[in-house]
Image (tube, rainbow, N blue to C red; front, side, top):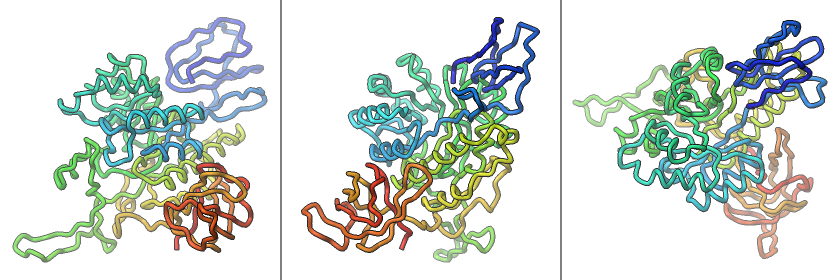
Length: 478
């Protein structure tokens, strides 16, 4: 929000710099101040009372207040994942091309596919940000100018950078394009935040190693947009600037080619006893000493919203459409839940309890377990997984709807049998339980089993009349 909205004030008001959204009220009127300005009343007769929390906005009916929801920013490692994220409620997506991106092994986009993705997103009111966030060496700068110009021509909504040289070049080649700072830049304090904003950055993705108190202080001190990661994999190194993969495999994480050695199992070897391996354990739980659980700030959403965060980011460009669709769906539903809470609930956001269904659904998306990381306290051994590289996944995708209808055409993702019980993931937290009654292949022949990649007409009980294109069907894992 970048507009000051004043209702019913006849006297002139003066705008001065401020830090985050504020709400003020008089006996007859309520006022909203966008997160870039503070209003100072010159007329002494207007007595203004500042409300305790700053994220309420007067709604159009003027009968109450609603929450100023942050943007929900989702990963799009391929065109299909982009479409899935949009379908399940993302306000924006971030993606990368084959160069200049920190996910070299993701599907990524060529120019034409990116153009199609941007067109699809914009048709649905969704923004697209492109990662240009490698830590660049001289050779990496070749072709940068033309790439930036191409992104501008494609009409992307912003770029994500971490390298000062790339930032400087972007300000010259595409001066009107919004620039977001990657978490790779490790913004951990308000002076660092102010520095980057002074260089022309419009949004900062803060380091994952910050507490809620530190985030609030940065918000209080600076005027630019703030973005934080709320969900996804965590690097064992400071905000992802890790050299472990480079040293062990020759694959540079800071060039987008991380081999994820933090997920390996390790043992101790004494040089005079070759072949004798000793388990490396902090206790009896195992040997995955660098293997962090996944970040999940679901229960902290009320306080993050109240703190004035502008964008909530989900990690996962390398993850499946089941993960992307599932996680976006849950966070969208959670934010919509917060939006409908009454004004009184926001007197103390720390007391707002998120319904248990949200975390229950998170556990079904396929994670390594969950941790709140640094948000309340420094993480300890309980935030690690010691027994395997990831937690067991309890649910898996069955199919994606390609043509909706009472008997939809679906693309199979895991082998499925007639008679199985499955669930349809709606846009929202609700699910529709189904039983597969029959399946037909593309030739119209009845089949009892369908394999990954097959297109089949699926008849269910009850009929899936509410199914939509791009919707996902899932089941409890066998």
